[in-house]
Image (tube, rainbow, N blue to C red; front, side, top):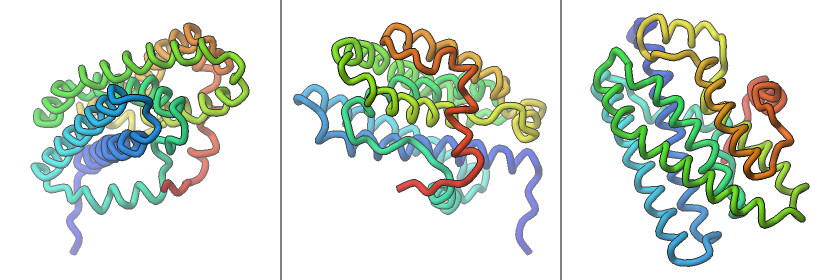
Length: 237
């Protein structure tokens, strides 16, 4: 008979799968962007980012093994059904993902640092500053890039929408039963609603500084940016 897992174990599994999937996809996306880089410095930085994301992924897998979670098949399944970090076809995609998806990951990890499972909390504390650094560096580069390309605003608007939607999904849906139970059981210390509010304030500041304010205030545009993906599964390549 299949093993019956407690609600606590089910929620921990869900959190680890979401986290590991994001880390793996980030590493893949950064490596795929190397041909887009202009100069050796940018290429080296992408390789460093990919390596760090690989290390974060390995950390998720170590926690999963400790809790007898067979995580690889679950990640493959999620990859087929749930949209993740968008493909990078331009350097703008790279900067948007760094500014928003990495920073969304940072805000999620802040809530995981107090996880009742010490090994997962330790992992979050070990990598949270790297994610914060990725996001802050990406934000500065995005601001510089966008202020120098005002003629490309129509193209940039579509890309901003795609990457903001991905970052919001990284944080997770607010006010779900699973989210409430994860907080109640001590798997995380903050709800997705709290994390989304904090991320939205950050994103609004970056968007204003970059002159990309179509979706500000972000709190008022969350449904618009995510409803197509949260209403139906979307295959990711």
